[in-house]
Image (tube, rainbow, N blue to C red; front, side, top):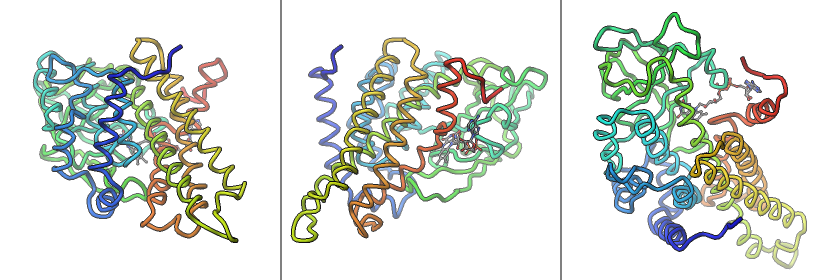
Length: 387
Ligand SMILES: Cc1cc2nc3c(=O)[nH]c(=O)nc-3n(C[C@H](O)[C@H](O)[C@H](O)COP(=O)(O)OP(=O)(O)OC[C@H]3O[C@@H](n4cnc5c(N)ncnc54)[C@H](O)[C@@H]3O)c2cc1C
């Protein structure tokens, strides 16, 4: 077993560490969190220039063909600077690239992958519905009616991250009326500006500079050629998108723990009480030690899942464990990081408050911690809580 990063990987790490220090310092991140609901265009262009968006795009379509481990090395730095920015990038480099590259036709790949690499095509995944996210098979009712050359879509999606900024909404629809539920879905690319698409912001405590929104589809008509993957088979096919998503979200948790730990480690040495630094109080050292251990565990699990993914091995359980450990570690860091900062822990001047808020979002998205635990045991043979 070799956990050492190669020279190329060290270069990726250093490049993105320097990039984030320059372009995503907390002052700017805080400005975004207070003023915008998606990273501004000039920042997006900087992502293009540094190769962030072309990273996972295959070389033959204008990208760098980076694997999951290398992608995560770059992503870790982004997650540590701003989970909102990581999300905004992830819904395109994760969802967009995967949907098109894994499920698209050659024509779709030729058309859209170079556009993603050049920063000209943003995407999102519209799966969840108001009826429920965990039991999505039971809840999904957005329908696409077969009109010959077109689909006619009616329905509603909720909590769709980045849809308000996306050029294309990968919309999971029920297309097969008479088929069994798991054989009734198809994925359809819906341009956001298609007549009949309305978007409404939800408003949430976390990740303000990457909002999640509701989408309403009212007689939305798109060409059949916009279908991605096999008609009726989307329930199975989207696993190629949902499993890697868990690795990316786990890395968000890693980023949050790392960011809060670093700030707290510094603060305990600077802040004084009762005639000396608060770093000498063992209870605060315990908070820090737990963060330190959680960080190591979450990071190791996340990279292990990424490594398995790169090596073509099953990784759905490892990705789920990574997401669970990272999410709970991030929530712990948010709670106890804020305590270490005392009253300043809830003030916007101190980044720990933003990271603590952001940590909430990954407790239940993309899979809740409860469902993660159930899933892990049910894959070991215990009775299912689903189906
Ligand atoms: C900020 C945010 C961003 C999101 N971004 C996207 C996105 O970009 N695209 C997208 O499609 N979706 C997105 N989601 C949706 C997300 O995947 C769902 O919120 C998630 O699947 C949970 O669904 P739910 O919120 O409907 O909760 P529910 O499914 O209603 O769950 C409610 C409670 O019941 C528990 N529960 C339900 N079933 C079980 C079970 N079998 N075993 C144990 N416990 C169970 C849950 O753990 C939870 O505690 C996002 C959500 C949020 C909040």
